[in-house]
Image (cartoon, rainbow, N blue to C red; front, side, top):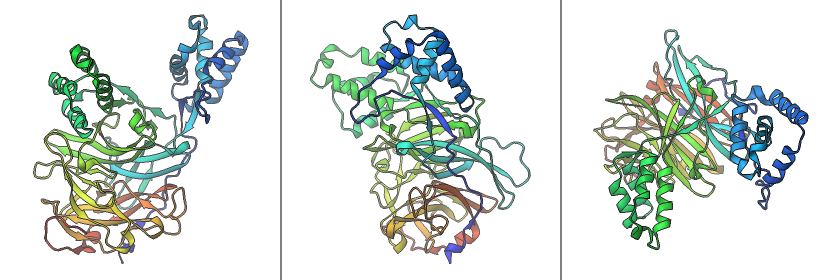
Length: 496
């Protein structure tokens, strides 16, 4: 039976409520009727005498200082964000300013609610390892209060054989610092086309921009627009759309002395304000060398959008939107290299079918070719991928997920032709990994789900989320998995 191929390991990652970040807190904004109380609070803090102010600040650092990397810097930053409400800000002492920042801060436990949906790639650092070992980087969807998702990391060593050692994850967390990025004109054009925002203003801006540009160049182009264009009825709305679409691309950088498990990719734009979900990382290689790429789902509380991450070192990440019909829904997973000169990705544009999409010359992901639709009883609700395709001698190994009765998620597998991935050459009959008694209970019951594994020394290493409550690990001999698959008729594309 296929269910016996996967061997579960006893090592798990569980949500740790001690993993916290310091966030801005505005009293009153969490009420049913929003009414900021910031001004009154600042007045009360400003009227404390020097002795009380100093004592409160010392007590705060004593309680919280070791839990954060630079708490004083955070307090300074939060003070700067609210100081416009202070009538005589220059009269406040440095100690009072820090205390104001403390009152406008709170701790947020990034994974207090759930930890799930991991992906696994080879770590950038492969030093100081024994024979047969591989250091891996594990991305994690971490969920806190309000079902707010962010992207976290863990480090582990796999091998030799089926040994697995997960590194300690203690230490203060760091949210990446947003930094400048070289924007791409073609992505801006694709975003405008996707939102059907084509007028004389957008055409003039696109014509004036170079292929790559920074924020200053973008604002110069907007500032030099002819007044007779801006005076049109759509002028101001067009500027707002241009800035919003352009801001979807940004970069996040972490200090060089932070460990990978201390880094948190936190929502930084309105489109992802309610979460960054289900990152699928892959180590992409071409003639320019390896780069880490990932896709994730940005969620603003009402709409979803697909975003791409790129990093050479997992310390600086560039974020860009993904455009086109192939990136229309959740679950995009990039191939680890080009195939026949094409950049390819798996997708689920219709919400229920695994498809193959190709990036065109305008940086739009094209209408997908169907690969696999719901067919077997364990996957009749919907199917999708469980991460990027993994290259093997037999073909592209695609880990899938299917949803069955009672919204039960299980993991399966397909094999695509190595040179023509549009063709499914084999399929595992039945599920590879299903929720067992230990997996079925949690934040979202009856789910096993992965965002990507890797092959090391002939073993498929499969990290998986168990009911969104914890992360487990399983291994599968690749040769046995391929041998258990059933060949499919040789035809291009399939409907199920």
